[in-house]
Length: 194
Image 1 (cartoon, rainbow, N blue to C red):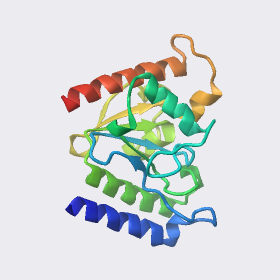
Image 2: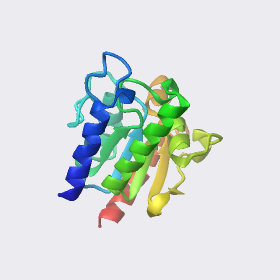
Image 3: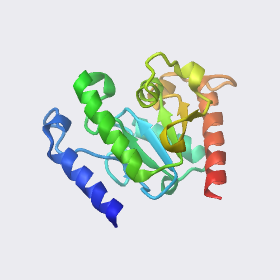
Image 4: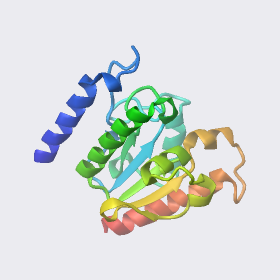
């Protein structure tokens, strides 16, 4: 119950703070959606990944593509919580240094409240942000597991936007590699969940 109260406080704070509402489209700021009581947290950088806390998605959006990807490996929304670094209709690249610091603090609070055992980062920018290393290249870090604070495992994969733009599906292509990465993530989650 205490965690739910803290979650509601965090939600209230971001919905009343002007930093999180950059333009008139930001009538509501979203912490994320999915199952807050699971072991897997997925972090993206795309306001089109989901439209509400129930992970409703628009047709032909990045979210629709990502849904196909996780369903391909039989991962269901009940098994993860999905959030974006930026909680409004912007991306990480649109933020000032000060705003990035505020969003980093919010993300740290979310992670502390969710207490996942594994985090999947979608793309290079999210991976760099979470792992606090601006030199990382997604082509070199995807498919690897990194230790994060509190023993949480971090698995970077390609950004769904990047995958949409790259139609190649042959063995060794980014789409093929991401499918293999998602299979491994599903296997690891089954092991963690027992």
